Image 1 (cartoon, one colour):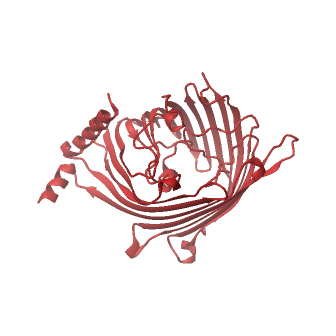
Image 2 (image 1 turned 180 degrees about the vertical axis):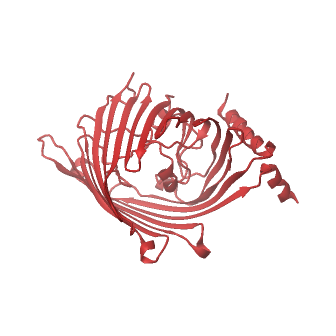
Image 3 (image 1 turned 60 degrees about the vertical axis):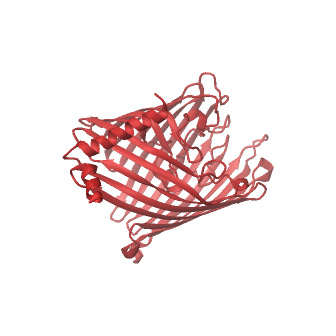
Length: 416
């Protein structure tokens, strides 16, 4: 069935479910966003774009073990020249974009849920949460997914992903196309398990497979090793292994990343972290098909090149404890080193990130104002260049709900 036909069928099913079910309730979100991004380089041309848009999302409640999600996203150009493309707020060429991002039908049996078609996924490399903050059109999946929590404290997930929505593309494309291989269509198959026996320990293991490209295994363990009164210490270990697979269309891969992080958290709103990572020397980690959840990943640089070693320190503060609710400040710095032919590490990349965010209260309720800045310094002898990245985001989110006779009653009340 063609992609447009599948979208229409899923859209009709979700709205039919909403309109016909007499006991159905639902919620929705209408959101507006203005996003300005300017990125300047010491050598390359600058990226500059200003976009406005948002989304309308409808979510039905469960009705006879069925529910649905539908969302339309749009990104319209306010300013941006074609020769300053690359900010990725708009489609390639600084063109507007409107797309049916979510069209998901869910079926559940006991504590197992089957999700069909366009959906959000919540796993380490394809996580939907953070990227929705950083993009006009979020990173969503066209997939068949199953999630089970039948066993206490254990969550099992499996997905077959044959389409990915990225912000610079007009519609969903195969993961291999998004990774830069337009003539090849390959899916991503993932399976994962997350075990949380208590609020102090969490373990997870994931496997990602893209035929003829790569296989990647991800493992992470989090443990709160100290918790007294208003202070806690949490340690986290992370391990990634990546190997080429089949025809190895993206080239030979035999690499991995080992990382560790320690975080200190106070109830007064202060959090501090320190993290280190080391990438194996054979290859860079290949993540063009998704994101990268590494502890030393910064806003502009992931610090996952072959042989790269990285250190990140930083923290965040919630000013609610100081009498300014909604205001938060985050500061992080990273340093990396690269191996050389004589095994003497060279300075690789230094990056500083700052984020100031205010989530409004009172008259500004539902408004969020965000400033993000990044400064990157790279070793020119290793082919790098310096970069400054500035982002200004204004976001308005209006939640709503419809009554128990579904969207039919909502539409009839509007007509009256």
